Image (tube, rainbow, N blue to C red; front, side, top):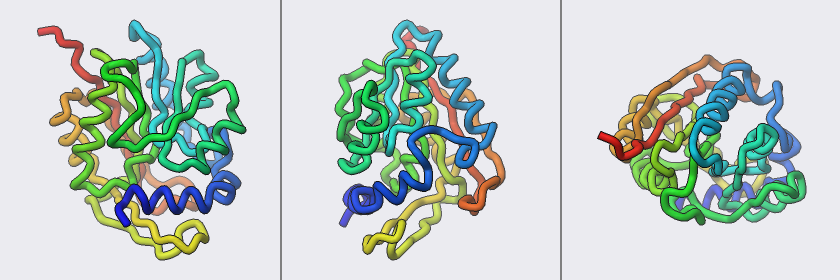
Length: 220
């Protein structure tokens, strides 16, 4: 089973339990003030773009999508798990949600003012991050912004034999922030901010990393 199928199986089986833990909205119990501040900064950056359509990539129950929509951002949520999409649609009926992979987004070329990957790349092995970043670069319009959040490390895998109480295994990766920056740069994005904070919640065992990047506008 590849890493995408593995993540889909786990979240299809654990959608109800996972949502009971994280909820369907961003909350102080799961996002630190720094996390929410970076999302707010992302909103301001996107609001200055000629278009303001944004994708919440790996949206889960639509928590980030709801945060963006509440701030007058036109947003679409994308996830590989049909069960998670069903939860998102029920919780946020005014927001469109579509099925798609990180490497095959159901979004036209150069059509987004921004994209958020809020912990959605943690199941992507480091050697496949280039495919994800290339796809994000494809859908971003010139001058579009990207915010990526992930658990920081050196690229090491963390394997769980029965993730979220399911009978399915799942491997996540603690990506190197320098490695993520390097792959984004190769994909044509210009990194203009990075942040790392220490663990603050009981469910966090490693520093949390955030990268803000922008795709070129084609000017010289």
